Image (tube, rainbow, N blue to C red; front, side, top):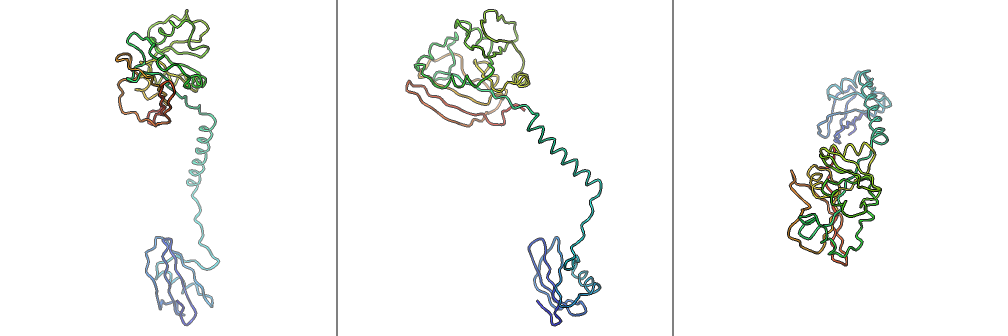
Length: 287
């Protein structure tokens, strides 16, 4: 809106509203258009003659506006020394965090279960025999590729005793950790790399992570159950062979809470094997 003397003012606010006002030569508000609420408002004036500071200030104070002449931006408040120091400290901390997370922090160790079970969920017969696993014809189902990706194996004492009966050492040159609180005799292990550890699963994982291991294979019923219950398993690959045995050593046991699984894939094979792969939710990871 424009008055007869050619003075016009437009007020704009940070909220997106706008209003127009026209003033006479004495700086009095003569017409007014629009209504708005403003959290922050600036005022700019277009005039056909120079607008006096005194009249401008008077009008701005009446409207409760901040003063801003053309080509004369509002002065910036200087930062207080303590604010500047705090900002620099924050920048430094963020830079350190980025460096630490990207270069100094060890990558997390991944823990996987890869096992065969009967359709009714047993890893072995009550006497730990595994003969029923041949029901699927022993066709290739990804174990060799999986085993090539791991750099350490966790087994329990019972599994260790069963494996010793196979004749040659089943795990080859792969480092094997036998979990037991009782003394074990490794003298019969020929050509293998074996050590004994005991303790809670989370602490065992932290120790092996600190030694640089990146992918662990967890084998054996009780060991799988303990690591699952402790939230220390990242991946499950379960291959069901087409047989029911009725009794034996179960794959799963009690858990302190529900464990969320993300289904990755299910594969079937000509011999009757059905393999399901799952990843375990982030809430079950080692802190």
